[in-house]
Length: 83
Image 1 (cartoon, one colour):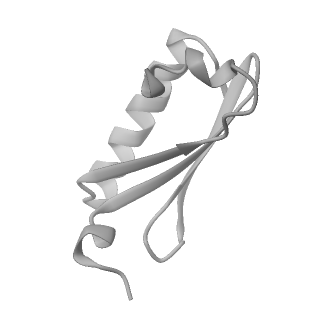
Image 2 (spheres, rainbow, N blue to C red):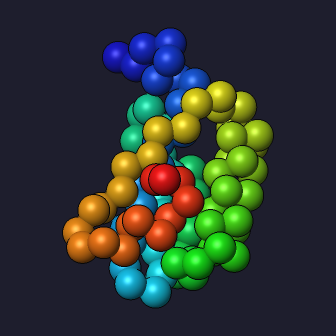
């Protein structure tokens, strides 16, 4: 059973590579809410990611965001989310 905070949370998984990253957003019930494919691992890509997350929050009335990222190698350091 999902807790109150779970029901307010957007869960986002990020797969980071050297030049790009992808993301998948889920709710507490593991329903896919959105997918972001092949975003540049540069400032423009991070801006796109932030806009995508904010639009999902508004669309599904979610207040919290939990982001989990693959940390293989050093490529995730570039992502502004993790600094």
